[in-house]
Length: 200
Image (cartoon, rainbow, N blue to C red; front, side):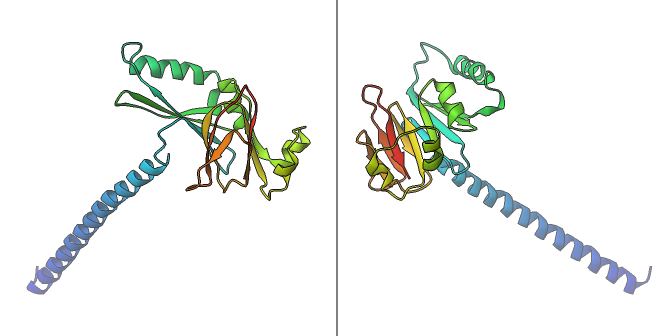
């Protein structure tokens, strides 16, 4: 092999090596950066929810975050997960166990339902989430002042829980306290089984 061809081959090998190093470096940054982004998304996806909450998504899905005291003397994590899996299995793919975390004496369970009706059936509660017009067609009667708001969607439920909706809450019944620092968030206090109303 001539000296000229050897130099050319060496240049090609060096160029390939440099390219490979750049690719490895880029992938390393991508993995680290991607992990950081994923971590931030994962950490923020439940908005630091610390109390039992229903999250109503634009898609119609409902996310239920249940936060309860966890006593390992009564049951262990494996037993709790087994019990949850058994309940979920009755509803097929309409209910999904997103996460179960146990820490500092608290159990935080996140379930995702295809829609509000599945959530209502699973929990044995009164729960409606739809447009105001569609709920009216289904026979739901709204207070006159509620219909004066320009909200297009409504949530009706009958038990105490925090609620997060996709848009600013425009109207709420007396048993609902809207968070003034975040008007997509409210706390429902059930009274004698009466339905609470949120319009957004």
